[in-house]
Image 1 (cartoon, helix red, strand yellow):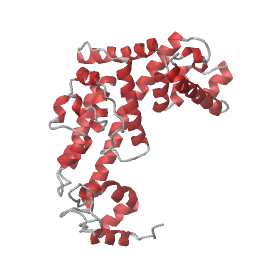
Image 2: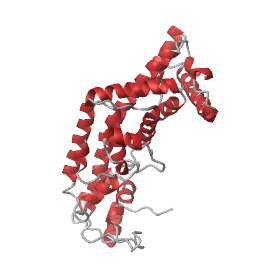
Image 3: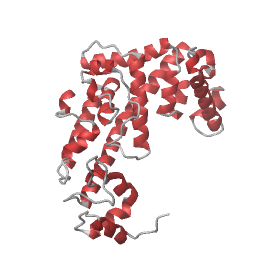
Image 4: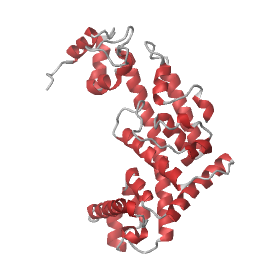
Length: 319
């Protein structure tokens, strides 16, 4: 275990590695509110000297001109990105839950239909997912049945919990599996519901398939978790990103900018599934953040940050 270090000792170590900290008192105030590990270890990489292979040299040394304030600005930029993105991911999550609850209940009107295996796909490859989904839903009902909430109320007063109440207690990850386990006819209906909204907003005639929507949900789930757990966002990318070139054609963005599974990918994907006015607002807010923080980082080009985020040159033009 590493020994305890005071704020002054932490700053002394950073200075010994070449990081400029002209105002030690200000830096200590930052460390009082933003944990050293999250701030420095999370955001120092761009400011470290690297070898010919791009690997940080050992022992660590900071590039010429790198400052403590720059690291804190990148940290703050990432925090504001998370706070911005989560609003629109929640917008999509709410819409998805509403559409799934409506279409599933429309098709399966019996009480607790979501606990019946025959109401899901018969694909044997998805059997484990179906069983896990039913188990998860059953556990949520069991855990809330005696509580003074909407699930407890419906059990006491009506003897059952409709899906449109239950979805409020399901995560986006839960909904990802729920959608995956539906019959193809239902999956297609829900995808078409999103297509209707998209085509109305953009005066288009695009088809959103069940596979396309599945890719969006999967991608959104990973980014939703990053935001919810306050983890580093700007340089996050999926290990196995969606490779659906049909989405690229639908939103008219070259697939080479979408198949990395990074921040630009999810911002682009959201165009398919949230209202146009909301997506335009998202783009404006992200643009404002970039304008606000781009002048605060000078020891490296801010274009390097945008490259890591997957943003192409003149990215706003794609929206």
